[in-house]
Image (cartoon, rainbow, N blue to C red; front, side, top):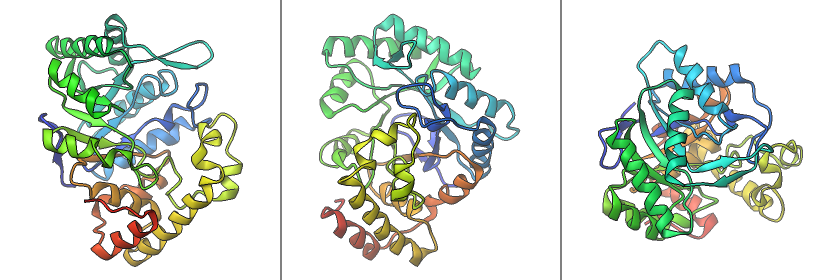
Length: 321
């Protein structure tokens, strides 16, 4: 699989990476319900077999469980070691409710905890998971991440869910290697300012939820959406409920039509569409089984024609420049 340089780093990443959010399981505010750990580990191994060379996780995913699971997967992997990306800035209480905490001391403690859970000596990419409103607090947190780089605990540093003003402010403190924003046919807000800014500044972009958290895979149906368990955050998401659900499922129909011409699934078409944006370096794809890996992780091979894109864009009424 071909690779792309991530921002100002020396990391050459595959166009797709494994997203370990759902693998964290239940027991926290944004969990995906109970998961089969052995199946998740097999999914990671299958992704690596297919040439994926990076995994994105975070401490909050399953309250540490996702990072521990990634560590188990890597311990049982005999091939080249993939890059491991994780984050900081979300703390949780005994009920699994998360909140933003970017105190510099907390950032350092989180880094040390992630290193222990992942059983690595250095983190390939360390990202602030969510910004805070107070500019001075954001500056202090980014300075703390930069010090972790100086200490050799972090190779490269990025941000997640930042707007242009927050990225620009962070750049004044220390270089920003990458941004991780949500980006899909369902959520396109970053097209207007954020993606063009990152492209101009040479900041790598690894988008998350290119299939809109499962909506655009082709496997989600109205019936399945109504049967999502109570501990799956999507059950209460506006995207998975009316009036948005009907429009989102209609979009899947459009993706299925395009995919049929290429012998590909709607999910693969959705991912390929996101990768077409010239600002996007890579896309994070959540998988929970080897079968899911086989179903979507070759999306980087899909070459959408201008006609395909026009058909997809006609549905949303916007076109990527």
